[in-house]
Image (tube, rainbow, N blue to C red; front, side, top):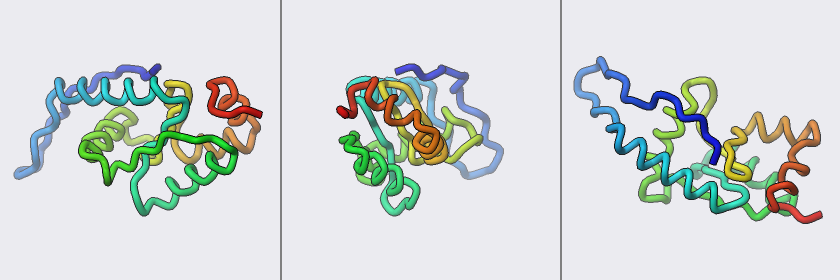
Length: 134
């Protein structure tokens, strides 16, 4: 997986009564879990039940003939930790779900996937990683 490692050290929390931020070791373990997951599958979609944008991404990929590995974070035992990791990794520049990985690399969320589909780069990308045979 080709994620850019940025400083993932916990940021201080100023509000009283809030839980402690995850330890750096926990973040590293979550990074490794995501790395193994996305490097072992051509297309991985991290979603949450009831999210309409997640549904759109899944339907687009399935409609193209791709069989993505779909991880429903609400049903995964470490789903909340994975979602927190994605939020921390991506920062606040975009919503963290759906998160689509193609060929071991983070592609993006709904906007990026739809933009790639509209501009014609999604199908060639999926072919290059072996997720689509046309």
